[in-house]
Amino acid sequence: MFYAADRVLVGIMRSREDFRLARDAGWYRIPQRSAPPSTTDAAVLAFYFTAAFGEDKWAIHWYAEVRGYELVRRRDLLPDQPDHPRADEPYYKLQIGPLIRREPPIPSRRWRRITFIETTWDRFAAAEEINDLFASGNDGLYVTLKESGFFPERDYILREGGATYRVDLAIPCRDGLVAIATGEEDAPPNALRTTDPAVIAEAVRRLGGPLRPATEER
Image (cartoon, rainbow, N blue to C red; front, side, top):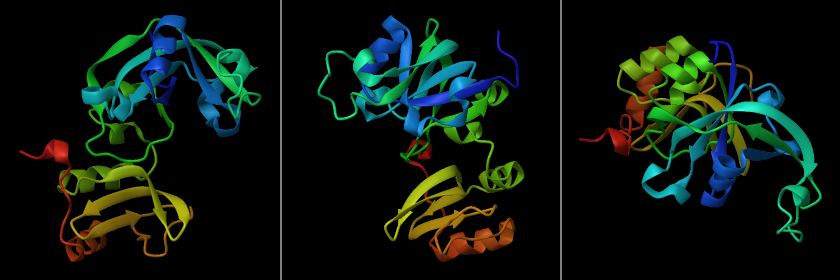
């Protein structure tokens, strides 16, 4: 049994072999250098499937209780890969219980760059799509834009001018992308620094209107 405020960490599952280790051996690895803050206090670990999983890609299908963790070298986790360039780097080994199927799955409506997602059990239990997991980006504005048919993406990673940015909200449009930064974080020069739906709607209109996700098309 999990409680509403319990931390849920969503990790990226990049290969079927890594999924086999999670399912059969009961552990998942995270490089210490890129581990998110909730790595050591998450109560639940969920898995976002990449393109390696065919028809199950771009969605969360499974999760598990986190039962403990330890810090170990990669070569000790995967002794059959002693020559890996990161063999001596430290990794968190999250020990997990039996996998539980998430019914229905939590899909991403479109392809997007995703790293780790840190969320809570109440959001995870109620989520209908990946964007519902994020706590950043002004909940009220997100709901307003979603209900207006703009198909916003939350916590969106984009690359521009050789730099990588993470903006609170983004609206893919027919002729470009409207990026919205509601806080003080670094953002592309053309990002909107506003929470005014009317200003955002005008920017979307100038770029040909919102681009409907492929999974939403009829």
